[in-house]
Image (cartoon, rainbow, N blue to C red; front, side, top):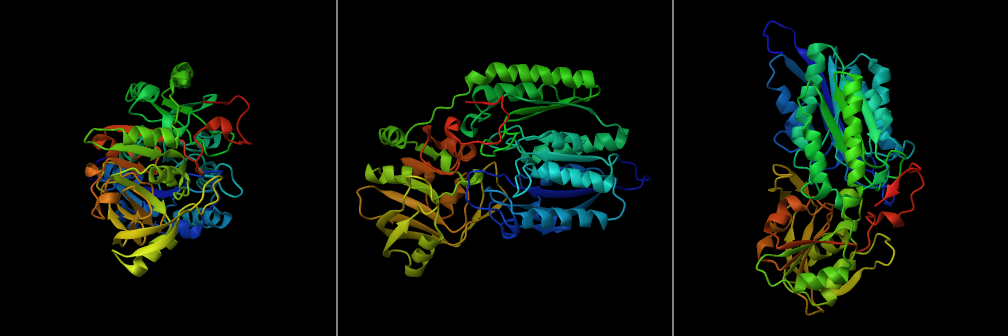
Length: 501
């Protein structure tokens, strides 16, 4: 694909990302896809490439790989994402999907398509958002049009996704430090199809169990060995394997762990898929799913005499999985036990942030902090708080996962409770954002390395940037809209053969 005499190969690129939590009360409407949050706001045309360049995003990795080929002409269509939440509204899904299809129709002859998807999108009428979008694209361009997509490690892969896409490339790390690399793998998969004119044979398997997200960490436990197994097939006779751990807050028939294999023959693809599935099933009991209570975690953290901080993860209130990021159970425990040297974040409370900005740094005001999202047994913390710091919410990420990107947090404040012997600095934001980067604290002049305890609202992504500075990491089962104790979840759509760890 590098001959200067050949005609350009025109490849369309687009992205439509959402991770849907069936148990979260909010919805992802058009405005949520248009706004910037952890990632950029909606982009069209050439701004898709310019606005994602250098970021750890799949579409950025695809573009970088494609630009090494002089024969490839990229045709950017549209890219958007929304912070995880409840279902995508009908209006948002229909308008964004229609625009992607319309812009593809208006782009002239195209040799193929790359899509940057998540794989766990549910809309108000579609239980498989990505499968529906891929189906519409197939109807538009026909079965012979090469089409590949990248998916999140937490994708709930459906038969429709596998059927309609010629190849799916799935992240292999959690925290997702390989998003850009996954986009680059998708480019190589599409390039192979364009060069050879041949589609790989496919095999698809769904494992009969769920793994809660806090146990999916690929840096430890059975997940690490399973992904080593998956990588071992790369480049072997045109073969590659993909493993999705699934998003357990999506209540669908396809929720759970799944395997997709691509090879030069159906027999080889099916043989490898069966081999990986067998290893998955033998590993089921090895996933460690235990969570500490808030009381247990705070007691352990307060007894830590090391110079490095203890990181306590509020795993069930992770906004990056549809949580409200405003529950107070763990924060209240830290306050009531008089914990010292604590950094806490990120608490989503626009009213509290606005109040702090109205009075200024050094002022004291009465605030009803957090606890506004209707989580059972969760209430606001009513107290006087001193305003320790203020910010405009523009936070440049510095960690490995999102480094090069910019978080948009809205008006932000650092608050410290007054009516307690506890010493806690709480970062309060006006936009939901998962606390996964040290910059969430440092951009406000706070030093995580000097803290004794760091309380983060995240399930595992925080590990990439916080674990290297931590003495220990504790995972806590404080209440939230992102359920991790799966036996207690009121699913209605799971397959009958599914077991829950």
